[in-house]
Length: 325
Image (tube, rainbow, N blue to C red; front, side, top):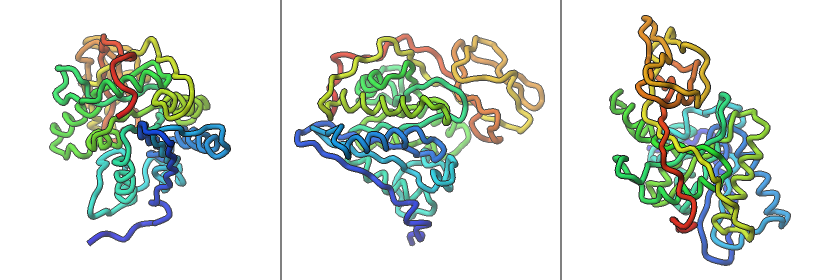
């Protein structure tokens, strides 16, 4: 038996659809999957205003804009409504919470498109970045056929750093903990599972006044790059740092502590002490690289910080992938 919808107004997803007269890519852009991350919503509303007044026109393909994916969380100013919408993201025949109902609507929308840009921000200070799917190289146990498309799109979004390996790393964590690997999967993973490709754009800290501008410029660049609008194709970033996320460390006890205050992308070297467990045992860096997403306020049993290593490859930016499917 299907649960009663918790609040039809808050679980209704307002999607604004635009079609051009010519065939082309089908792009969907999401804002506020997490309710305390407003930059995507602000940027999308700005794009909607330009479309409404005729300053912007879709000439090919399809564009769908969702300014607020998770209205309950957005109205509360919290990351989640009942749970994290960007974890365990999949349709369900027996929805039981706010995010289940939203996911059911969003999954239908995503399946109508070929490309997703999901806009987010951080609760801590960090430079902007884009998260890609699985690597297409032989080193990745789950190569993704459209990896080159994601890399080409990422190179035109205006950020200087790209990461991959998020899903594989969290799946390893799930196996270690004996938990469902479905929990690891979010909007971009679902988009890939239905035959499209996707990127997560992280625009900086939640309250950074530059984050909405970065999000807006990224969407405008994507529209031009994918030729949905009549605009000069933006030049790709010439220097993009590419990192592979390879490990996630959980917090075990409230008394676990970092050796110092860390920021994302602080450098680590083999053997560096990153943190101490409650009994004084050091947590050491297993290789040269970087710390990512250090969360001092993590609860025991949850992700405490991630580790990443440099990938010497450059993102493929020209002449490798077509601009849409």
